[in-house]
Structure formats: structure tokens, C-alpha cells
Image (cartoon, rainbow, N blue to C red):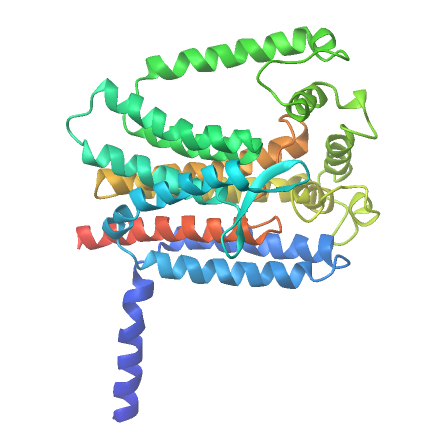
Length: 384
């Protein structure tokens, strides 16, 4: 009797912690994690302890997700302003006395060395969701202007480091909140049209714009070179264009069915640079082919659609905006990484979620998943 009571008591004790977890979302993440472990074993088996470290990082991210999922969205809302102010303060500290590595000043030592820009990936949507929640029902155009200012301060500081990849992710996360809060399409369409026109002009006048000695105002030299390399990677096949060309060759050599697990020549002969981090998608595509790519893209699409579904059903404006923007972070990660490896976007330092090696990125993903689980759990409590 005591044993039976003890079993029931243990089940009842842990049931509240897992009952709020969203099953479809957890399934999508599990499938992506399995794919990540598989390709990490292949591409990193001769790369020190990359596979073991990747598995450890996943466990850490899962633990963080579990903890954050227990925090109600209302408590997350209370962290928005302090976290944003701390993040901006640390970015200013980086600009003043940050640590420079490989020509970029992105780190600061506060007893431990941290990269404050990573904090803003989640602090930014938290802050903007808080801002619009406080003005629910009485939004004015000025509120969107202030939101834009809150967004551009950290984005500008991150671009100054320079770190185009992280700045892009923070910008997308913040713009997602502003758009979901009700920004008019009239303000969205003109920048999109200008962007398309700019791309057309770049392609049309590529030879003149990328000629030696031509400098583009407002861009660092390495940023200009990345755009020019995107337009024509064969311009410098052994230098600036090497990453893009090798990624495209690996993806093409995979064909429909792939070369097979641990059989990728581009991967194992080390033609693919950064094959366990930014360019791991090229290694995956080579070994698992088009069918493997469709599986991976399908898993990401399912995760994003599930995240948006959670956002639509969220009980408050804050949780709705937060869940929507966090979901768009996953979209941005996946789209930008696959795009740059495939040669349709410039090469920037953006990892592929759950696939690429990287402890900091995995922690951010764990936090983001925890937020989505928290919102999903709050929705169930309201319905109950």
C-alpha cells in the first residue's frame, strides 16, 4: 500500500512540470536534435570532442528549457526592462573597453568573458512585447516610433562591433514584435520594394560596384566583400569565395539520396570549411541528399508553424507577441544559415538551430524553447 501510494505520489509530484509541455513542438525539436547528433558524429568524429560536447550542450539546453517552461509569462514580463537595460549597458561596455578578437570587438570581461549581443536576441523581443502590452488598446503611431528607437539602439551597437549576423537576428526578432503588434502594411511594403530594387541594381551593375578600389559608404570592407562574393563567388575562388563554392559543391554532390552516412568526400577530405559549425548544412546535404534536406526543412517548417500556432492562441498580448517573435528567431536562424551555405545569401556567422556546434547558441535556443513552452502551458491553464 505504501509502495503504491509512493508511486502515485511521485507521479503526481512531477506531473505538473511536464503536463504543460507542448507535444508537437517537443517532437519537432527531438527530430532536429537527432539529425544534429547524427551529422555531428559524422562531420566531427575526427574533430576532438565535438560530438560529446554537442550532446552535452543539448542536455544543458534541454535543462534550461525545462526550467524556463515552469516560469509563467507574467514573471518573464517582469524581467523585460532589467534584462534590456543590462544588455544595452554591456553593449556600451563592449564599445568602450571590450575585448577584440580577429578584428572584432564583441566580448567584455566582467569576471567572466561574455558576448552581450547574445543576450539581446531574447532581451529585445521581451522588451518590445512589454512595451506594447503596457499600451494595449491605446496604441498610437508614436508608440511604434519609440519601439523602433528601442530596437535600433542595440542593433546599432552590435553592428559597430562589427557583428552583422547577430545584428540581423536581433533586428528580425524586434521587427517581428513590431509587426505582430499591428504595424501597417503601408510601412512594411516600401522597404521591401526598395530592397528588391536594390538587389536588382546590384546584380545589374555588379562588375562596376565590385571593381577594385570601389568603396560602399556605410559598410565595412569585409561586409562589402561578402556581398560581392555572393554575386560572384568565382571572383576569388581560393579566398573570399572559397566557403560559398565548397558549400555549393557539397550540396550538389549529395544528389537526391546523398553519398551516405560518413561517406561525404567534401566533408571528410576537409574541403568544407567550418563543417561542424556555420557550414554543417553542407555536410548534411552531401551525406543525406535532397531527401534529407526535405526532411530537415520539413522539421523546421513544422516547428515554426507550431510556434506561430502557440502565439495565436496565447492568452495575453505580451505572450502572443513574445511567442511570435521567438518563433521568428528560429525561422531567421534556419533561413539565413541555409541561404548562406546554398549561395543565395551573404556568409554571416549564423548557426543552424540544433545542428551546428556552439554552446552559446544552444543556450539561447533552450531559452527560446522554454519561453514557447511557458506560453503554451499558460494557454492550457487559461482554457482549464
